[in-house]
Every structure is written in structure tokens, then in C-alpha cells.
Image 1 (tube, rainbow, N blue to C red):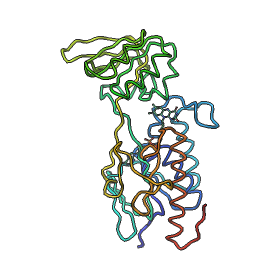
Image 2: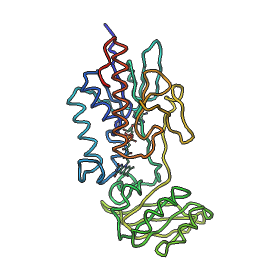
Image 3: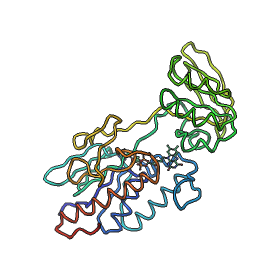
Image 4: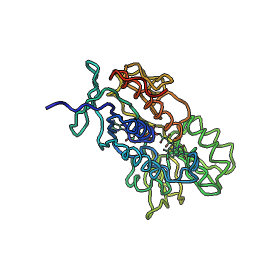
Length: 309
Ligand SMILES: Cc1cc2nc3c(=O)[nH]c(=O)nc-3n(C[C@H](O)[C@H](O)[C@H](O)COP(=O)(O)OP(=O)(O)OC[C@H]3O[C@@H](n4cnc5c(N)ncnc54)[C@H](O)[C@@H]3O)c2cc1C
């Protein structure tokens, strides 16, 4: 029995990976997307109002639309976590947590990034229902409201400057008592500060209603607010990629302008890579660049003419 070899394995089901799949499947390449979920960060975006051509859409609906297009053109989708990547004799082998082992001529890594969570009980239930991990994206939805922000450092300063001018009241919860962002918070008359506190509990029935904060002495306060922004940074788990890519000081995979990494046949796209401005349209475009480069690479490997400019 002959081995099944994919033209392309795409790691990641966010907008970068799905946009890439749409292009490569439409071009007739045997494409599979392996992803832990469909939508990635878009699943946390309750309203996208800045994606060209669409006035307003939930992040999940936007992702599902692109998935539908990719699948209609023949892309396969496997929900699983990639844990292993190898390249030998010009072939990539991708292994997953559930024991799938797939081979391909080319790979696009579009693993994005995930916001650091609070890790408190019930957190998942409030995402998009009062809890957001992105001030730039969702801040304007809470104009004139009472809002809680949990952050620190440079991220905290940026989030404060975005939120304080537009909300009615901002409660800033910062984990240490000496954080650089505290001075900035004090410049605003509508900001009250809980320094040395962390978020301990979230309460609400369907939507977020109350946020409980606690400090190291065990002092607890229940804050009556239906809006919480958590900006504690992002994390990626890309150990399996590290032998094949260069990574910059921000933890981003370094690509050239064609989406190529330092390993031939391995491309990368989206929030994972060293392009500025982490936004949906930017990630989609980056996925398309990686896809077109992968198409050309695969056609060259098969002895076919370059099919896209
Ligand atoms: C709350 C919030 C609101 C936002 N609002 C907006 C907005 O209004 N407008 C806008 O333009 N942008 C917005 N953004 C930013 C936008 O969502 C991101 O820039 C974009 O979705 C990134 O897409 P991506 O495909 O590069 O990565 P991600 O969305 O991070 O997707 C990564 C994918 O890779 C998968 N993955 C990761 N590791 C593995 C692995 N080992 N194996 C298999 N799969 C893996 C994940 O499961 C996921 O499917 C928002 C972000 C957030 C968090």
C-alpha cells in the first residue's frame, strides 16, 4: 500500500491557517489543516468591526466562513494538537497528541498566540460575555461604562491610555505595588487602583456581573462591573518548531517577505511571525502570502511551472 503524502500540512485553524488553506486547496493542492480549534483568537472576539468588507461579525462566524470556503475547495481539517515536526529527505513528518502521523512536501506554521489566562474557575464561560483579552479590539464596545482592567508594565500603560479616556470609570488591578504603570494610572481622575491585587473569582449568570480581587494579605473586594479586560501578555507553545526556525526576542518566528522560514519548504504566517500589527486582516494576508509561496515551492518540487506570481 502506498503512503499518503499531503502536498501541504497547515498547523493552526486561526484566520492565517484557514486563509492559507482556502488558497492552496483552491489551487488543487492536497491540503490538511491540523488545529486545536477553529478560529483561534477570533473565538474571543465578540464583534469584529474592522475587517474590510464586513460591517460587523463575531470572530467565530468570520472563521467559520473561511473554514467553509476552504473545505468547499477540498481542504481537510483535523482537530488535534501538533506536538512533533521532522524533516528528512525533503519530506515533513507531523505528529499529533492523539497519535496521528502525517507526511507532506511542505508545511505552513500558523500557530498564532494565545492570551495568558487568569486561570480562575468559570473563566471560559465569560469570554465574549464581559471578559476580553484585547483592549485594542474590544475597548470601544465599553464606552461610557464601568470597566475593570487587569494588567501591568508596558501592556498596562498602553491599555490604560486606550481605556481611561473613553470609559466612565476604570478600576485598574495590577499584581505588584510598584509597577511602572501605576504612575500613568494616577494621571486619570476616573481611574482607581488596586495595586498588589489579583483577580480571584468571576461571578455572573450568563454575563459577567462581579469581579472578586484579593491581595497577598487575603483582603478581598467584590467589584460590581460587567466588563473585565485581562492584558497579561501572550504565550505560544512552539517547541516542536524550534529546530527548524529562527525566533526573535519577542518569541516570534522570523520569516522573509515570502513567508519562508530558514528551512526550505517550511513557511509561517499570522500572529506567530515577525510582522507588525497583530490584526485579523494582517494575519489573513500573511496566510495568503505563505500559501502562494508554498504553492510555488510544491510546483517546483513536482517539476511543474511556477503557477502564481
Ligand atoms: C479578544 C480579541 C479580540 C480581537 N479583535 C480583533 C478585531 O476586532 N479586529 C482584528 O483585526 N483583530 C482582532 N483581534 C486579533 C486577531 O484575532 C488576531 O490577530 C488573529 O486572529 C490572529 O490569527 P492567527 O491565525 O495568526 O492566529 P490565532 O488566531 O492565534 O490561531 C492560531 C491557531 O493555531 C492553533 N494552534 C496553536 N498551536 C497549535 C498546535 N501545536 N497544534 C495545532 N494547532 C495549534 C490554535 O488552536 C489556533 O487555531 C482580536 C484578538 C483577540 C484576542
